[in-house]
Image (cartoon, rainbow, N blue to C red; front, side, top):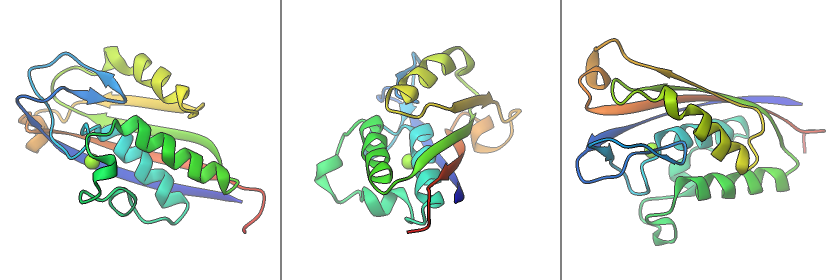
Amino acid sequence: MLRVGIGYDSHRLMEGRTLIIGAVEIPFEKGLAGHSDGDVLIHAIIDSLLGATGKEDIGVHFPDTDQTWKDAASLELLRYILRMLRSEGWDILNVDCVLIAERPKLRPFISQMVEKLQGVGLKRINIKAKTNEGMGFIGRGEGIAAIAVSLISRQADI
Ligand code: MG
């Protein structure tokens, strides 16, 4: 049985925060706002995996009000979700992602992001970096967005 899921996330860029995308620290004058490290890419990936398994979304599993995950690295949230899915017999076939940011240029960091994500078990992961051609909130440099699609499989529908 195959299942597909989509995830989308966006975060505001603000001063005084470290920019972390795909678990990689990226040198920039601003970082992404958020309850956790604001890792927009990992949040989109988590939502795509939860979507594929019909488990609602990241906010249900890691609510803002839960102090357990306050300031947690998003990579740890992903690790937790992957463990949960594996325990239910799911295999992740592949994950494809799009990052949309005007600045900084993210392409030079993609191979490091891939390495980090493969490190927690996302073997077939692809990440693309786009700008928004100067349009809208992303184009004005107010924030960064990410989209992810996951394809997963399991032997039988349990
Ligand atoms: Mg988020």
